[in-house]
Every structure is written in structure tokens, then in C-alpha cells.
Image (cartoon, rainbow, N blue to C red):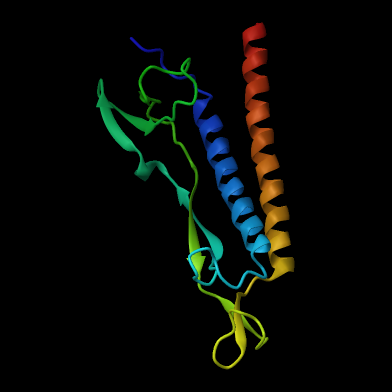
Length: 169
């Protein structure tokens, strides 16, 4: 019988989900900055500015399981190491919730026009279509994502420290 996950696992999952969301925000902002002056992608299309759509994940996204008269919450666990749990789905207990943001990267067709009739991608009127990237705003997004990532990392470290202290007893 597989070992049940420890009670600290939901806090680790919530923090790691937050870290993944911030990594996606950072990647989108970095890609936007890198393509500020890109008039066309490799496909020949204009570069679309990336935005991260984020919504809170709650227990309603998890499956509920009846077990011995109690309602237990089940969530999908991602196996990143062969030493992890044998089964990807483990009951966490009726009061456990795996929270954290769900993220999705969306392409936004925002563009700015610059007059440059000598540019190879200029339209009939001499305008070149560039993505409308606000450099200051993207830098602020990067800073915010970096700080939120660090906060989630601090939560993971605190949980690991509590577990280490528990095993010292």
C-alpha cells in the first residue's frame, strides 16, 4: 500500500503552483521585452504581446472521494522523481485544499506603427507594425513576478525547515 502524503504537502503544492505562475509571468515579460522591435516572427506574422491570465484554483477543481463516511479531497500530483509516491493521486483528507493560481499565457494583438518606408516589412503606406510593448511596464511585471516567486520560495523553505525540525524530535 502506498504511503499517504504528509500533512505539509498542500502547503508545498500551493507554494510551488505560485512559483510556476510567477515563472510564467517572468517568461512572458522577458519574451515581450526581447521582441520589442520585432516586426515579424519566423512565421511571417507580427509578434503578439504575451499576457498571463491568472485565476485562483480552489477545491472545486479537485475530485472529491467518499471514504469511510468522510469526504476526502483528491488532487493530481506530479511525479518529478522516481522516489515519490507510487500512485499519482492520493487522498489528502477532508480539510485539505490545494490552492494557488491557474495560469495561461494569452497572445494579445496590440501593435504600434512606425513610419519607415525603407524597412523591408513596411506596408503600402510605409508603416512598420511592431508589438506595442511598454518597456517600463514589462520591467515592473518582471520585478513583481520575481518578488512573488521569492515569497513562494520562502514559504517552501519554511515548510521544509518545519519538517526538518519535526524529524529532530
